[in-house]
Amino acid sequence: MTKEELIDCYGTIAQSGTSKFLKALKENKDLGADNGLIGQFGVGFYSAFLVAEKVVVSTKSPKSDKQYVWESVADSSSYVIREETDPENFLTPWNSNNSEDDKYEFAESTTIKNLVKNYSQFVGFPIYTWQEKSRTIERKNHLRKEKKRKRVSPKKTKKTTKTEKYWDWELANETKPLWMRNSKEVSKEEYNEFYKKAFSEFLDPLAHTHFTTEGEVEFRSILYIPGMGPLNNEDVTNPKTKNIRLHVKRVFISDDFDGELFPRYLSFVKGIVDSNDLPLNVSPEILQESRIDYKKFWENFGRFIKLGCIEDTVNHKRITSLLRFYSSKNEEELTSLDEYIENMGENQKAIYYLATDSLKSAKSAPFLEKLIQKDIEVLYLVEPIDEVAIQNLQTYKEKKFVDISKEDWNLVSDEDEVKEREAKQEFNILCDWMKQQLGDKVAKVQVSNRLSSSPCVLVSGKFGWSANMERLMKAEALGDTSSLEFMRGRRILEINPDHPIIKDLNAACKNAPESSEATRVVDLLYDTAIIPSGFTPDNPAELGDKIYEMMATAVGGRWGRVEEEESSSVGEGDEKDGEAEVVEPSEVRAESDPWQD
Image 1 (cartoon, rainbow, N blue to C red):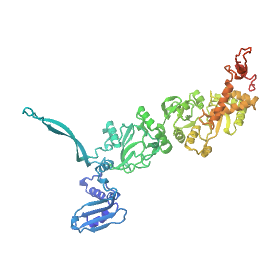
Image 2 (image 1 turned 30 degrees about the vertical axis):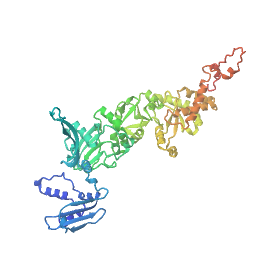
Image 3 (image 1 turned 90 degrees about the horizontal axis):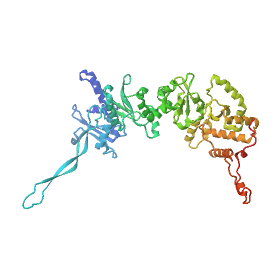
Image 4 (image 1 turned 45 degrees about the vertical axis):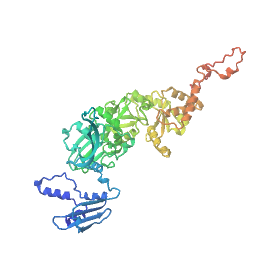
């Protein structure tokens, strides 16, 4: 280059020689320009300063008899151009004086090979690197036996092996850019093999999609769903997974997008995108080609889809069809929301769900009793993220999601309305009396229409946390419970008017409202209802003592227990001949029950 060309090309950032070359090719149509060339941004030369403290360029143009030297130091905003006067330097080298720490790093053959594989693995021409290799060679050793009777034995050969090191050229970019081919011409085996090589995986992917988009933004892409989900739960919400690799003209650009190129809930998807700029969406149909494959997908990546229902406000309605849950009608196989709606009764207007800590506790929850009796299906939400995801959706296909552990939902049909009104009138006094006994533990006591076999259940207020959410937030609070009291929903005790215990208490509040025994039953009834309703007892030890005390009262003398005091007072001359007195069960029961009318 001449001095003027040095100033133009190296003195100003973003002067791209490739860009000018392409422009010249387009002007000369006979040459047939190849737009696949890279280097159109004009900053390639300055990448030398990433590893060098000083860059020196010596150059001589055929247009001039003079040779010039361009010099610049890293972290400097200036450069020097001088004429070369030393005859020993009348060459055209490009010298890069590396910093002391990195002096030999980029001269290592392994480093060069890795750089090529990482950034130029898919370029359209072969790239070879000079690599040290080893091979095993055989050596022949000739052996001769000693002379015997003046006769010489024939030579014998013994083979040995030796490892020999040598240098040779090795192809560094052998993997072909599969996304550049027509998807109809690529077999499943080729897709799987490409996935394993490109992402260093050993399992075949569950599914893949190969597509091309044209328009204002053009790109080619292959996306994969891995054969196994992340083992660490932190990876579920980690946007920096480096699973999506952006290429420009088949040259690797970056895989660090911090959730910008791909939404966080789809961070498990791996793939290659050949484009400059790209917003991505994954079609649900791609993921549901077969029920068996989708079951594997859901087991591995279902948590990501639920996260998408929370974070992707634009597409969460589309994502909802991918959700799967166990239900009261199908405890072995997962159920989709579309299947749930298809199985709904004619008069059912909502999608009912229950959030708990496990499938076992969901199946035994008292909230289900009337629903199962009426053959209404309930979805079981047993993972911590489930409840938040469903609450964020609110509706699906015009069907509202209803939490059966909360107040203000009604299963009463027209024929049951009269019966419910009569029950409320009959037990109205009992509800007020129980609320007085329980005080601030509950917001109110009311007759339930959701119970059939349990005496009572503890439900959450409409606008507060459910029992399941309260449990999760306690686990996350790390000992700070001050905020929990503010967000914890009010508790409402619902009673079953058909249960014997409730009927007995109804008689007690009318005939013996001051009875300490009745008060103890109300306290125990509330404490016991806490556990099956999904809440955690504030004082488990106190609850245990109440149960033991009640058990002692219930079983005392029932099987003819021996009274130790009576046994020890019997003498040898007693007419009963030393036999202990046996207390009959009837003797421990009260002669009259004050709770009865």
